[in-house]
Image (cartoon, rainbow, N blue to C red; front, top):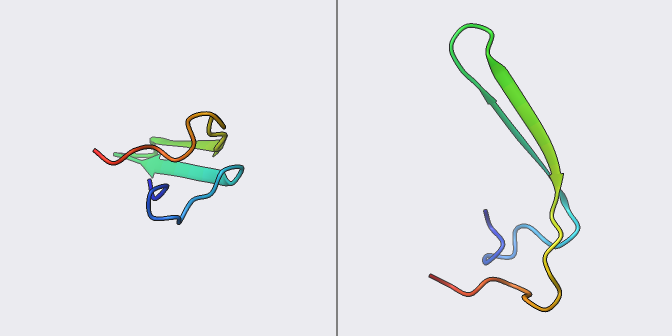
Length: 44
């Protein structure tokens, strides 16, 4: 997602969109809200 790399910050809006065969399509707009106690996720 890019959180660890600093490309996506807390509070930013993210648009995810995909399409498939024929006219099948879907989209979702989300706002990233990380828990302040958790902060940035730890590496795998």
